[in-house]
Image 1 (tube, rainbow, N blue to C red):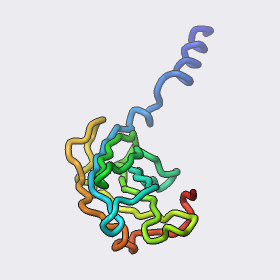
Image 2 (image 1 turned 30 degrees about the vertical axis):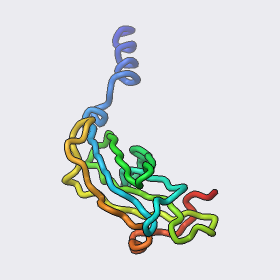
Image 3 (image 1 turned 90 degrees about the vertical axis):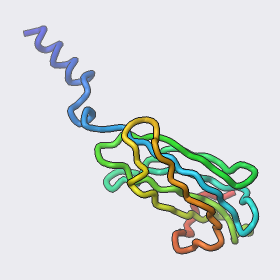
Length: 145
């Protein structure tokens, strides 16, 4: 009886739950070039997120631009369902004198999600001019100087 109790405690606290066994690791990669008109933006955050419906969104990876405005992000996330990746660009393009930053969101198609730790395909977001895509932006204060 004592042994049964010890085994039960071990299973309860240390064995993976059936839900954890059902979760799968998925990966995503995205690349592109970001400009503000013809200039490489300064003070910019580039993030890859997994949008969740029932719990807080998960930051997969954060990166930066090189001197030409190019970026490449890749990362993985373990979820029960298919991840919903999106690229978030937090910037001040066109609002340099304002304290708060804007956020531009670009959805990444499911075709670019790979099962496993390493992505097979890379989503090419193309040349993103932050001046001409305001329909994907929010203006809340996401980050300030």
